[in-house]
Image (cartoon, rainbow, N blue to C red; front, side):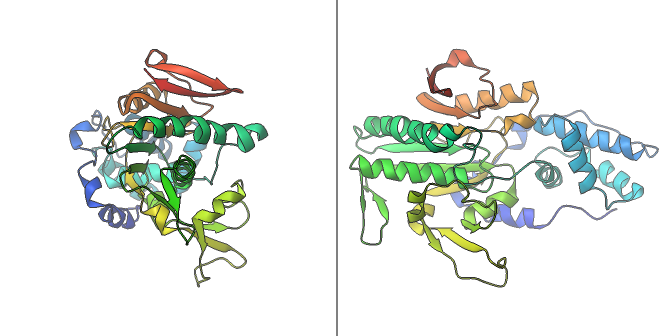
Length: 344
């Protein structure tokens, strides 16, 4: 039996998940069933790679392409033919929620992200449009509605959040909007504290345990093309500087999201193709630039889950490359070419 190529840290990170998230883990019955694949000893290396690509597609909806195939070949380059055969033989009968498959797909997907990501393609989107959509239209509308309740709640889902920058960005905007609307106050430490009657339920989710570990740690580097490359200056209030350590890069500065922010967010492992939501229906869900990996069936399956997880009147924001496959469920809104969707 060959040695697993997947780090044992995957299992350790799962144990760190908060107790309230445990009940939301993907149940085995929700994982799509796959037909058994027989791995013949005479399979060439190319055929084994092809079988793995087909396994990734059937379990996670990730379309085979040259880029993904190159990543897979590079990931497995250290395995000789015999070891690769034995590993494939063990892997093929396993379901998609097994840590070996999860570890493999983690190596194949891009986790590069940063605060205020996806605004650089259009300068006007990066500097003006998207922040206005979220902070001046979507979130205040939710606040005005919820403020009429005895126990108002705002529930936000940042799906496929990677290392957490998008999730924290949404929370920064929410805290600013609550403060402006008079439902939060700023203390003498510069912390924005929501009124005690408000329930904020902000969730970031991802398939990768590795990136979720970074998100929970909430420490980011200011170095080269780091997490802060496009962040507006006003957001520095949400960070505190970290002291250098032996693990830090020379010349790099490290910043930690302040505790008054991190205590308002939780991160959990989640597969958008699992058929399982993350708990309560959401007021706002953001899922951008992850469906580029999915085939059309997987795109539809993921959007059906996102739609079922939104309350009526909730907002969905997709990436600008993601088609809306369920238009009958939404009213489309647009501002200067940027679209978002209001669930009917």
